[in-house]
Image (cartoon, rainbow, N blue to C red; front, side, top):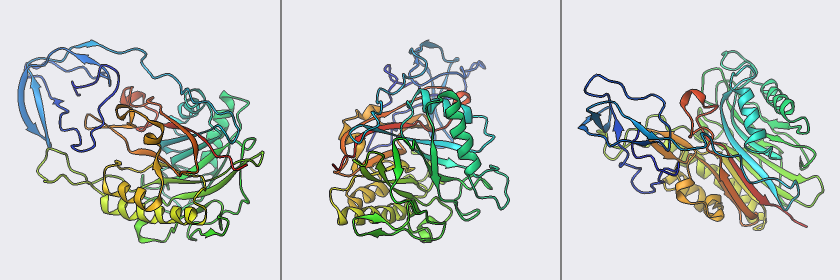
Length: 399
């Protein structure tokens, strides 16, 4: 629990000090209990207690249990205001880490509902952590067609006018990390009445995609250098080339889920400086991905390129500094003028953090963006995912 929650359901985005100002509240000294249902945005009575240090953090042991004085309304954020016009001038693109989604996942109906009701059915959705067709059962199954078809059907059951096709590349069994047996991967949901893969020619799990003159992709969709050692036990970026059905829009996408931050230390613990677990792996992954994007932009500096997903990193850390400098892309949050206090998609150790990002080339027009805080504003028990989704609205016209 964190008494420093903002009164505006916002939590400060600290780009230099990783938010050491957050104070954890421990067990009351009088034997009472703290409430277990506090939320981001709650206001508390003044806290009096003893400062101590445990488990790598400073914390206050209050004299008695905390009392919430005010909870903000509404309980959940409103739906996105960014609505697709389904033309090259105004397309919305969603991005969502759906947390180990399998065909029988209990949170699958909620994810479907959120895509319809909170993201307003973007014609293209980047999804991460799609599991194979039998989820964490650890066998030779790697296909995710049942997972994706079940999600698509659940969306259509809520909104019969919405029909999503999907595309992904199955991984080699047990090489993508994540929950054992789950074979998580990135995928795209797309509305075929609005978008289509340009000259579809899917790659496979071990063949590296290439940028051809034009530019165009040798494999559409395909993976970026899947045998590179940067991807050991991690997801390989899924790159695709799209066009609007009316033929007036053309763009490239890169869907990423970089190495996790497992092995990181707390900011106030013994490790000095704190350990950013997996930073070397993410830096290598960022360089491989960015180099591929740079090849597209070298062939056509005006190409529309969108890279999005779970980067598992902050924009001020070396992996994303490398990614931006090598790729030539821009942070969509900055381009859209999103306040720093709204740039969060994840809660960890009482801090609001942004692990999910959207980056765009200069060829992407009229950039707007919203992080939809449907999971950071609620209790852990009610979360459909541990990440918030994001909606990006862009123009990708070429004619």
